[in-house]
Image (spheres, rainbow, N blue to C red):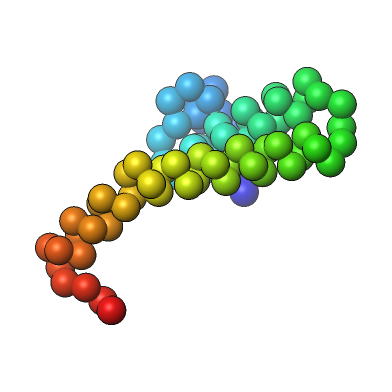
Length: 78
């Protein structure tokens, strides 16, 4: 959970540094989105789908090449 110091919360919303602040910033976006909707299952499912889509996109566009490079540099573990 993103339990960060109160003094860091404003910075985290626009320029997060580190995992806790990044998690806080993402959750603030979700909180704002959910707050503008009528509470229902579909809204929560949309949030989960958006997070999953972002995760897949990050993996496909950034992590796959990074992992491949590291495998070539350091040897395959399999």
